[in-house]
Every structure is written in C-alpha cells, then in structure tokens.
Image 1 (cartoon, rainbow, N blue to C red):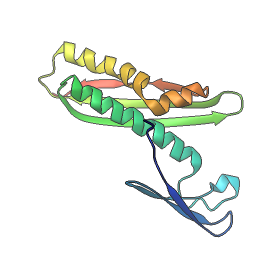
Image 2: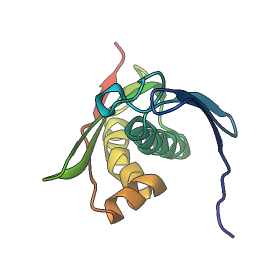
Image 3: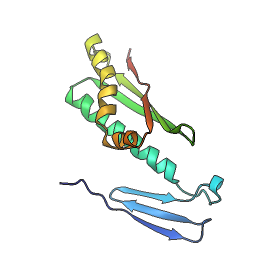
Length: 145
C-alpha cells in the first residue's frame, strides 16, 4: 500500500503575491522568493524541500534512539543547504544529542552510530539521494554534567 499525502495551496495575486499551504497538520504561507522576483512573504520551494529532508531525518533519528532505549535528554537538528548548477543540491544536517549524566560510553557510541542509521533509513533523504543530492551528517553527542 502506498503512503499518500494530500495538500492544497491557495494563491493570492500574481508572482508578487503569496499563498497558503495546508497538508494534514502542516499549515504555512508560501511565496516566490524575492531573489526570483516574488514577494518573499512565505516559505519558498527550497525551504520546503529542506524542511522535508530535515524533519524526515529528525523523526527517524528520534524513533531509532527510542528503540535503542538510549538516555536522551535533548535533541536539536540544524540543517543547511546549497544549490548550484555545478554541484547540485547539497544538504548537511547537524544533529546534537544530549544524553543524561548516567549515559555509559557504550550508549554514547550507540547514539553516534544512530546518525548513520537514521540517514540510511530516511525515506525523503533516500529519494533526494536517488536524484543525485548529497546529504551529509555532522553529528555531535554530549553528556550532561
């Protein structure tokens, strides 16, 4: 069975206008970026694409950390992207896992390995890689004092 999703965009005005996007629990404004002659008053296609890749990686990482019963006390993921005709799309995720003070060295190493596992299991990332996007993970694990 296919995993399906539906969304709706309502657009207002011309290329300097903006729109609203609704899909399930997601609701946001969209617009053509100013750099491309639009209003810039909403998320652009590149931001939405990177958001999809970052949220897929993050949610996959969370599920794997939980399945491994690791003592995670905090998680953040920063992501950046670049797009050029020469190099194509490049995305780098910077996950930072904070573990409780009771975490063992084995658990810290398991958390570090989970970065690679989550990258390999992320469906959106795999679709982008199939389209020749480069996705890098530069993760960090720290233990609370």
